Length: 149
Image (cartoon, rainbow, N blue to C red):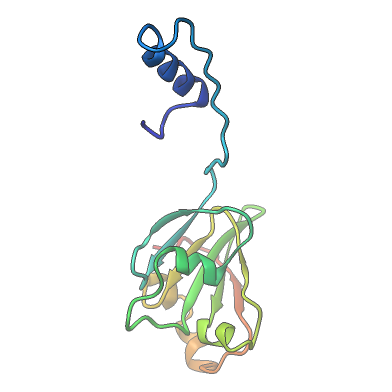
C-alpha cells in the first residue's frame, strides 16, 4: 500500500476492500508506530547519498552509517555539517578518524542538518583552515556569511 496515505485514508481503503467479501461493516483503525517527518541530508563521499530519517538520537557516525558508510577513498578528515541556528547558517568541520579514536565526542545530528563527507564545495570553504591546522583535535565551527553552492 502506498506510504503517502494518511492513517484515515488507509483505514478507509482497507475497510472498502474488506466490505462485502469478508466483513459486513468493517471498522478499521490504523495506528502509527513511527512517523518520519524529520530528515538529515547526507552527501559527498558516501555510498548512498540522500535524505535519511532522524529517529531518536542521531550522531554523525550513525548518520554516515545510514548512508551505508563512506566510499573507499573518502576524506575522513574533512566532514562538514551545515545547520541553521536562529536563522543563521553554521558549518562545523569534523574529523571522523579523530572521533573514532576518541579525540572528541561523536556530535549529535539534528533534523534538517546537511552532512557532507570529503571533497565537495562545502569542504572548499575550509581550504585555508585545513592548510593552517592539518591535525585537528577539536571540530571547527564557523558562521557562514553567504550561500553555499
